[in-house]
Image (cartoon, rainbow, N blue to C red; front, side):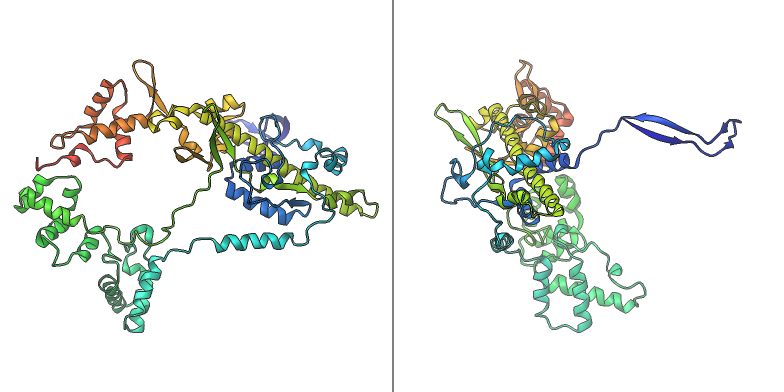
Length: 513
């Protein structure tokens, strides 16, 4: 509870004749605040393994009392001796909250003697490593050396071609300006009007130069269709006279793109006089053109996923969740600095500094261990719930909510959410994000649980087996799902169909049948 002052407005009379006067009153308010350590604990819990490693490396640089025992890379990751780590302790599972009220003198005496009470935290070093910072720099250098080479950007690709053309300086500069306005995420289209690329007071000749520069890029640089201002122009730039059914394809591009999108082939037939077969043949050639010519540029390197956890199967066929150790379990507090606290020659300022750093280091070690236990217990409960999926296939995913796991583990739902965020697990069926195991669902008329994944799979099967001359409408799909015991709203069917990039019944219709 806190008491907050309230100040009234100055003395004046309002239109109703009421007089407002100066006054000061006390008002009780109940406010909830998060301690900085609590916020940091939640951040640690949410971090994936790579981010946690970066955080630990930064702490090693910032906190001189924190040391890292090197791991033995030749040992298997699931052996207790991996990295000379300590065995997992039976830590009570509870919210990640640090009690700030215990930072008093008795704690420091306990910390000084930690090597006697818990020798697994420390080694026999009596002085800090002189090469600690250099070791960290070396690790960062090694990491940078193994980063995949950046893919060639669209601008780099176009500028390299531009440098080989013989152009006037003015035209080259204008081409450079247009190239800078192109972006991979826009498919290589020129979304900025040419007038906006020129100064406000540019003469008419400048716009003519810009048009010439745009034509140079479109006609002389690869990929074909680059720097188009709309889809129609992009396709026309790629169209060449030697393409089969050239005239019909050209007609479709210039006048019937929307009709093709909506599969209105009879309208095209009526407007052009083409037969349905001629339209289909021209449409097949049109599909060979690229509506997004810049799609192959930019970051094409696939993201590398490093699982935080993996699954082992014991002799009884049970799935046991294991967790990567990482550097967090190899941290310890320097014996040198703990001994400095006992040295009578240590000044008060030095002693206060060391105490502060030791407390920060001890908190980090404890928070990382608590993070580990939280993630392990959450992941184990998820795996226990989804055993059918691991045994069989994705059709056997059970409906699961975070609240269910939170109740089993004994934590808040938000803690479960942070524990699974950006965490991946290696299973016998592949690598999955922990969040993938949380799926909604419904019940059949017999009361059996059905996940939305099962409904989507059934929906996809129904559409794949439909008569394409009379494709199923969304209402018909709802009825067929209901006949299988799955009661789903029409809007849900439409939403899942669109998510799976399945066109509407009108667009799926085959007019040649």
